Length: 363
Ligand SMILES: *Cc1c(COP(=O)(O)O)cnc(C)c1O
Image (tube, rainbow, N blue to C red; front, side, top):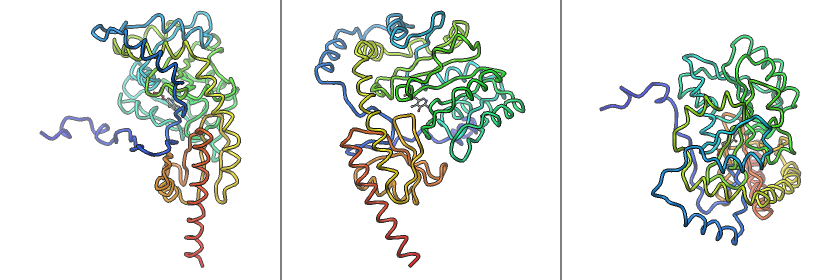
């Protein structure tokens, strides 16, 4: 039987989320924390995991984990948490809960692709409002668009992926105030954003939710995201969550990570210390434009992104090629000092060779 007879056309038109082969490569494509758990902590974690009853179902809404998390992030009084298998699951839950037929999902663009993908899954209409050419946020244009086509939900990545830009707080506030529906501020890169966050402001806005993740803090494989908001929102969204969305393994490992949160914060500080020197060094390469970033990655523009991407891969470095969606743009994660050196030298080589090629072609 031909699946195309039954599968919805908008699903047939999608391609699956592409994750490239990375074995043996310096992996700078996915904004992971490059530092592993220190050896003695890993041993303790193994011991903790060994005592888990894998024959039992997980607790459906792990209280200990929620309480520990609430304390770690200073969740404002009266607000509640919803836990997800990564923040991706929470973005999906929000979309699903709001998916009246034809409901509008609005977001600045370019941004995290999953906002519009989830809209497609659930039969919603994704409306992308372009950022300015320098990737700054045009709040006026966004608000105008919201008036023309009132969104059930607005997704704002703060800071944005793949650009690294952190929009001015007052621009986001304007959107929250003017939005006719829900606004989800996605703070996946919170740890690198100099403390800027909407979490403390949750009590001010009845239509605001904040979503974060441990993924960029060293727990990408462990999978834990969280959504913070008013109980009346969390209560409804919780109905859409699969009963056992967190396994006993990710629950226990997340608790362990939160008990040692200072280790993760220390690693984030190491990444942050590398950001500025890496940005400067990238900007010094001929032909490379670097966009300022408040996250653990840089968006760069090069003369020939596909060529540079391949040249980097041949030299053992994996980055993210955003071309042609973002013409001649690559996204590079801030790695360890050694990884960043490898990236820079590989990039220097590939830019050099593309210049030689240009020289031949024009000369
Ligand atoms: C990485 C990322 C996420 C998803 O992270 P999870 O691993 O699913 O927690 C969500 N939003 C943005 C903007 C991201 O960059």
